[in-house]
Length: 90
Image (cartoon, rainbow, N blue to C red):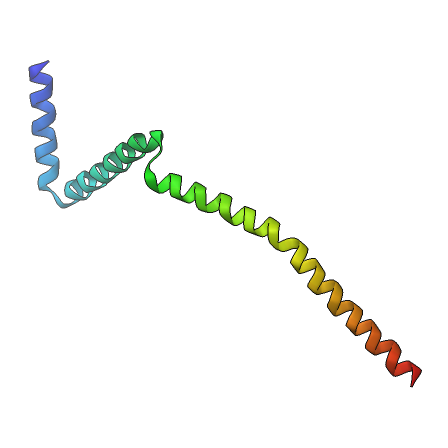
């Protein structure tokens, strides 16, 4: 077990000395960090809770706005029809 670990460490060190090896090590480090962050976020962080709260508030506000929007559109259509018929009558 120790020899395998030592061989892996030597291989990693040799790979990190070359430029493509450095790029690969940075990529592996980035992927490992991102996957660790995703794994630790599975319980639900404060940011994800805040975004879910924001999403629920936005859908609630959109639901409350529909009656107002339909009243405004209906009023504008009624005014337009009234003007049209008033112009034809004169």
